[in-house]
Image (cartoon, rainbow, N blue to C red; front, side):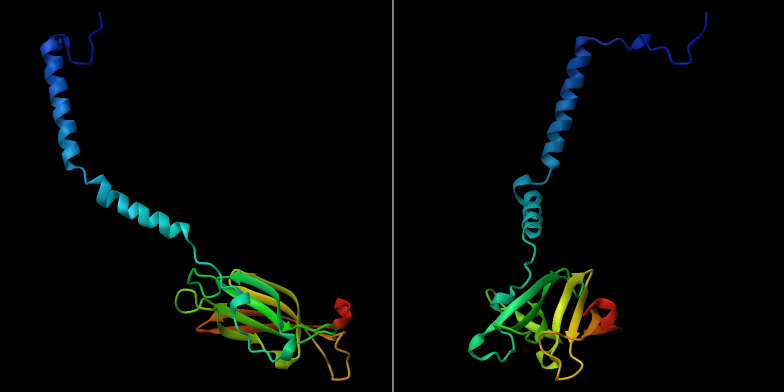
Length: 197
């Protein structure tokens, strides 16, 4: 006959008295644990509510329709032709980049490209914090995007005042990226013959 490597447990027979003692000890442990728990109605739930409300309300990108752009358009007013939100400076709050030009019935009016941040105070109008393209440069904007904090655009311009405003004959692909407290521009000129302009 093989002997067991385990100790002989025959002397550990339980009786009803053992079960009553075990149940009483367990009840005492559960009751003590309940007394040591923090107040769930105060400290435990308050941070949870604060975190939930903070996560539920991400900052909204500025609305360019509420901004005042520095364009002299007379009675015609101006048009927000394109707008793209994006976190450009890495602060986890979105800015809006807007392409704006005077409302014109015909031709290709020059565009301005502006970076907007929220206004100071509740309900304040968005603020223009950077002008990437000034309308005095007489350029219009083709392709336009914001990706990973980089603003990319195709700028269309004119080689001389004799070129009709309908038909820009120069093209430049540019990007802007926030670096050391300013937007740094990079460009790559494109030959119009290669692009079909």
